[in-house]
Image (cartoon, rainbow over all chains, first blue to last red; front, side):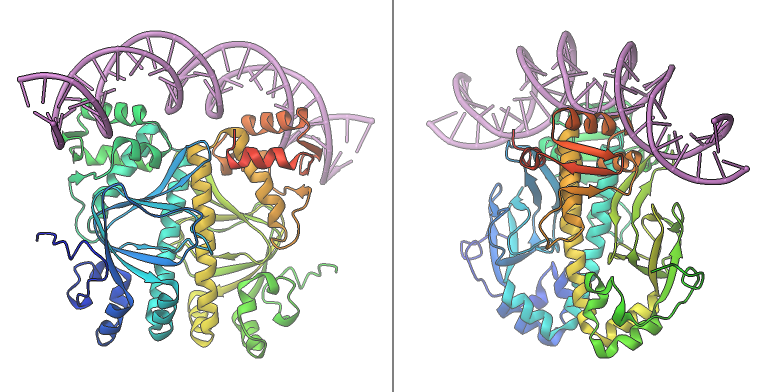
Length: 241
Length: 241
DNA sequence: CCGGCGGACTGAGGCAGATCAAGGTGCCGC
DNA sequence: GCGGCACCTTGATCTGCCTCAGTCCGCCGG
């Protein structure tokens, strides 16, 4: 499907019923008969690769739902050190960890389309559909579990264990229910992976090379990985000696 | 108030209305007129120092609300590496990051009293009081923010920055609204702090000594810290050079 | 076709924090 | 008062990852 100039603009109304992201997202909690309302609440927007559309510290007025593409969520220290707390793809809701201001920034790492809701409209949606609130709570708990897993990774795992955990997690990410894919597309750069895993770009690169040399993976291109020894990576990721 | 042997046992019924932890906890979302019901849902239990009362991997049947004392939440790797994801004190709810099984363990690091709810009873409470669900969502979002802050710490901060962040956070923890205390009680050991900050016990000890030598803190005892140069620690924690 | 550039890879050397090792200290039971 | 134990501190050495530096590759525009 070609991207038209209209699609690249603001406020394209398209029935949520046909949204490809809906089954993966918060919006699946909205019953069919309320979908027309949902469409009036959200605004579809497109963001170019590299664009920052949530900025840490800014007033948190909008929430987003990614419908295609991938974004990175990150925090910065004043001297420029960056920590990527996670990547978010299709169906992912942005704006849980929010007070009055955003506590993180979000940047598109490839072309992204997202639905934007204002805070008050989300509020209204929650009031009208209690299932939405319940769904948000479940989502928040899942994110909490993922965050604690990341804390374990950053606090106690070696570079190899970190990269193995990351690759396996990403291979499941595409569709959590399907059998995990052996071929993984990595839309982010080595630098992004490093900033996610608490490493440097060089260490990430060296660890990729090591896995490759040891026959654990193949890398047809730098943004594609084929897992060739999943059991080994799984043992590594689990921290088994 | 002396602790009677009855109090140390199971199932002491005391009106939640007088619970000292209530204002800090989930239970404040339950309106006064439903409090008698609340009391019938919860079971008060006491745990000795060192006791593990939630075990990672076990079926998640109960939720807890800490009413006094402090616990540590942690994850283990098969070879014994430990990562403490957080400490929880009075009013803290345990059981957000839960699927069918617990994804972390909980141990009392000092004598602890907690209210125990079964999963079904919490469900009932949520159905009867929608405010409880809303409160849980807010709590989950706060925890998510804290977890992301910890991810930043573990991924990108130096040992000194980690300890400074920890001490300042803990000095605010007592009462988030009150002006932060200069005198901080640390119920956990150096080893626990290390496992929380992704360091070793030796590095934590050395960093305490360094802060002491540099006049940033005083340590009347190993479990008490007096912050004597808060601005410096604050700069350090923020990552300012 | 060529120059520029962002991203990836690799080597050499350095360093923050880990590991190993040895006391020291406070506390409890007896 | 004293032995035992858990915890803390400090010193010496080691090492995994970081830093610095250089090269290569693919891609894009001209």
